[in-house]
Length: 82
Image 1 (tube, helix red, strand yellow):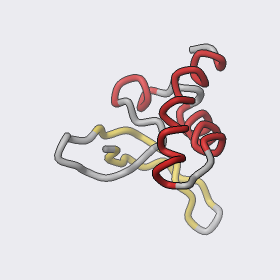
Image 2 (cartoon, helix red, strand yellow):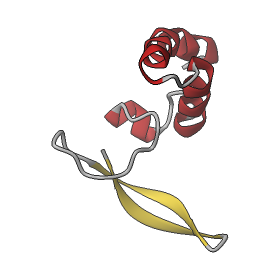
Image 3 (cartoon, one colour):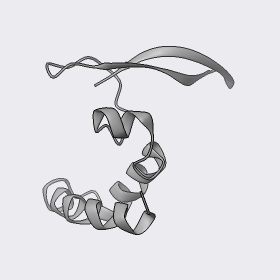
């Protein structure tokens, strides 16, 4: 997905959220772009999860390998994303 398309899709949603939460739309868009590789990550494409939210929810979860840092040391783990 092109960066301009990602922003065009996210902007109205982030602006609405800004009215509800007070979080600036620009920060929401930036975080979504960072976490989802501009909407192209496996988690974004397959599970519509732009923020890398871990956990199990009523809608189900997706199990993926991810990198976690413990005391500054990177390690690969399997985690559930909702």
